[in-house]
Length: 177
Image 1 (cartoon, rainbow, N blue to C red):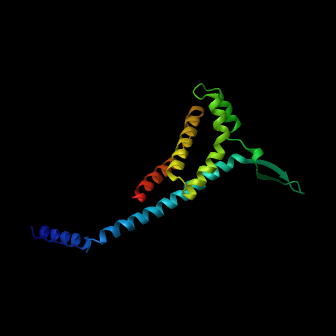
Image 2 (image 1 turned 180 degrees about the vertical axis):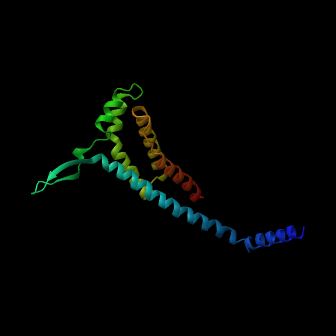
């Protein structure tokens, strides 16, 4: 019985110590939490932007094998607009035969995928129209996941990227207030 009372007294003392000493301390604590949320959002923005810009730029790359003077092969990656391929040819071929994915939509999607990923990644990095940029990226990833599921149902979905976007949405709402 005495042990329980002693424990209750300790809990009360701990609770009293954690109470703000003045009403001004409450907004300061909220401001500090909001500041931590802004840093977390910034880290997520960096991650999402790096992923999306990297994926978008990979649509503009062509690999070729070159040989040095000794005949040793080396793979060289060249980035150029003429190398652009939004959706890989074999993947495009498989999707073209699937009745659930309209052909006209596939052409536009393939044409716009790389530039949209780079552009929206840059917007997320800069924080420009952040909610809209995140929404567009989420829709692009959902469309990519849908196409991937049609062609290869066992392939892994970009779950981590979608979770990062969802977390960024949440932190955007929390840090605006």
